Amino acid sequence: MTTLKLFGILFFCGLFSPSQGVLSGLSCAISPKAMEDVLSDAILRNGLLQQHLQGLVLPNIMGEGGALNSPTIISGLHLVKVRLPKLSVRLLSGIGIKMTISARLQLSGNCLIGLLPELIDIYVDVKITANIKCTSFESGTVQVIIEECLCILGTVKVKLLSGLLSLSINDVILAELTTTLPRVVCPVVDIVINHANIRLLGTLNAVIPVGKAGMIHYQLASLPFTSGLFLGMDLDGAVMQVGGSIIPHDSSPSALPPLLDNILVLTLRQSFINAVLALMIQIRPQTLPCTLESFSGARQLQEAMLVLIPSECSVCRGTSPVTIKITLLGHPVIILEDNKATVELSVLIQLSIKPLDGPIITLLLLKADLRLNVQVSITGGRLVLVLSLNSISLFLESSDVGITDIASLKPHFSSLMVEVLLPLLNGAAGDHCVSSGAMAWRGLWPEKNDQQGWSIRTSIMYSFLYLIQDY
Image (cartoon, rainbow, N blue to C red; front, side, top):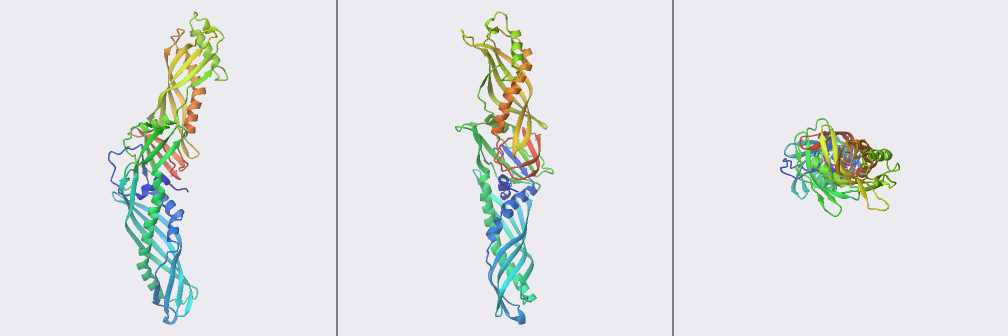
């Protein structure tokens, strides 16, 4: 399992009073189970705890417990391995996070019983509990602190090849470790938490390229907040075009819907999606001949137009080829409904001819308002929007030849949009899909919320990709 990077920082931030008036393009709620996965991945599975505890040296232990009550000295006692580590998380509403690590520590050293030296192995069960919170939020960064750390010892097992240790030395070892282990383990846990925080914090202040069109810069908008059921966070995202100009969007915070049985709920504001779509869908004007090579309905379109052209325009019925030019007007706008989303987009369509002995004649200049269905799909771990035509409305802008009624042309221009424009739109959306491969989604349910945004629920999540698809 790869690290749940972007969400990782949440689990180190525990000054959890709900944010007020923050700027945000994305809000999310994380379940305790997801938090445990993040911290286990960052601290245990990546070997961070083992790395910093490895070779930890403890003070010498002295006692009377060998054969015939010989003096016993245990020296060079050091940690060899952290065995069977398990991490759990509990949310402390309004306070922070209580993280508990249960493990068996394997210690090795030298044991001198009287004049007989030999190696000794000690296995001690420990439960490390740390209350974690973050403070000093400024410009998307936080300071992580551990308010309290406890290291409680459980069973202690001693292995000595000669078996000369008596039961009394076991009590001495337990007493010594109970005193010394917390003093050396808790500072190490503090170091581990801060190292994990440094690794994960960078994912909350990142610039994500969106193809060649621009980039998205996002950072933590405020201190995370928690209830007893989930951990919440707001991110502030700026959508920037090449050159540095920012596409504006409403960045007010979004209310989080219930987490229910899901491990993650993302809330992406509608205005933020619109800004991202404006960045992703940038298509230059398309000029193409009205031929079968360009689209399959070319002949039918020309025949339908000839019926509408007044007989006075003799040049219109000549051999001059018809040229089609399609130009996007403004930016796409997404409309959110329950379990459904559509994109509204306007284009300008010009059909013209160029007689050999005269200027260009515009047969038709139309504005087409398109309503496009949006299908949310998963491709290569990326959240992808796939567009399809729902409806088209045509409006006559002008005609140099006197065409006034365009109602009969609607099915032909629908075919033109499906065959020519939609592949370009989906190609642009696919090429500029915003992700970095840090997140794999499984089980996705988009739904409209009351804050003019989408909520996305997922039941299984590997790791957070740099998602900047607004909801």
